[in-house]
Image 1 (cartoon, rainbow, N blue to C red):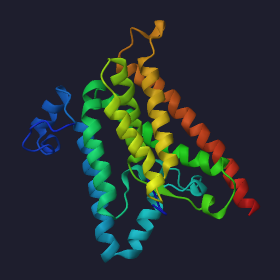
Image 2: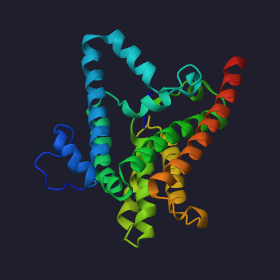
Image 3: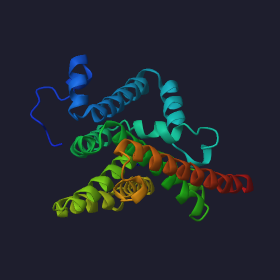
Image 4: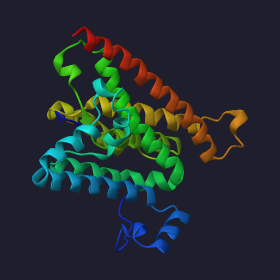
Length: 263
């Protein structure tokens, strides 16, 4: 997720996006664990980015309103709660922001989607993205009060992508695969805010924590839940985590509002 102030391997298919352009292909990919959800997310992000690019030059007033309504700003969370969701589909107009995020999504998303199934994977992605917004709110609530802290806003898919990183790391470790290359990639990604300014590292941490927590809960061998399938467990633990994330954000919002009113 980039601050504003900014925040599968290939399979050999001729057209990796054919799963969303051919109804028969959609059914085939869905039945066989293809990257249907990952492709849909990728295309949605690109479509939104194209709207941003066109409107920036042709309809600047619309562009400003569009980005302001969709970006996540902790101070305005009570007025625009939907932005916790919409912000994960917005990107900077810089080609590098969306290119890096979409390439990373395509590297890790299809693998997890095949392992988890389409709907559990979608829940993981969305909850991780909300976790990114929660991380930003916690920072705004707990950091020393300043104009830069209270005026922070962010957008981008990287909070959700960091949640996928956490999930894949835990799954690979569980099944005994070598995770050293992934640890190196994570270290590089976590170090990016040190090298480049205006990156919402708080969203990265929040997405990573929530995505990792959901994955650990799904792998938790609770005796009473062993007969439940993965989708059912995802619904149970995902619902609990969603309530926790929303509760934390509401708590943060009350504190942030007090700061604003005080100012």
